[in-house]
Image 1: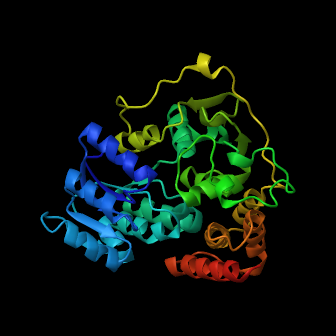
Image 2 (image 1 turned 90 degrees about the horizontal axis):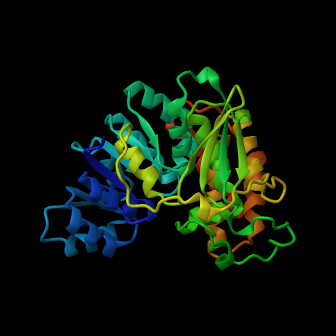
Length: 381
């Protein structure tokens, strides 16, 4: 079980819930980081007394230093500060809950410092999965999934003594706010409509990824690396109720599922306490109240991001970093109302042909592919 935690992204949805788990289980907090939310990070510092706090910019860090001058918490900033928080000496686990590619370097820094990883930043494995898993194996550290789908698979796999018995991973998807919609229906989607997720409360980028189903494509890539399963053995099924969080299928065609109310504190807590389980402040699942569970095939034609991610896995190398980088830039432009909702999928798909992929041998290979993809997406109309 985790005794001392560093949280990268403590003011976001995952980070704030993780702090609730820490409070309930008396897990000490050694470092906290935020991008811009100085006010909330100040409150967290005063409550949890970390040794280190990090802001996204030096300007925000100066503001924070002034606010907490009466405390003993050191304040750093930027990517260098994130890496400092990821490798802080007394933490035994690092929760990576920042959004986007910015999580890759700090995750590698944490691994290099022999910290176990509670992974909520899926882009880390999407962009640099081969590199991250290789380093984790070399340093003999564990990566515990925090995403609800990957946590569900991880929990189901506890009953799988031999991987030769495993036939398939089945990721569930809520379908987002546009389930059942056609391309014509989505032509004039607004930012506000795309941000209305039916089941989960998440940050803007992740919510848009859910609406475009890019989130599920990223999760396929993440699952490929986390569980060492070929992409062809990973399926997606749309499950609107978000009660079954994912499943595994054995070679005798038995299917094992993990169920629970849609509350991220369960996967967060399991990542921090594995292999132990403790009471958690979440609702009880009452199947009689749920009454029915429904399942549908995903629409790969309308939601082109999902298809692009599958294609990227087959291409290999930096192709997954390319679709991820193109998506991050396209989502940024959509949120800024520069492009339409359907343009996200078009840009992500086009990036695979426009940006050359190559084998990943070092971190710079990933960073260069990401930069090239973002440049392409920034110019694409």
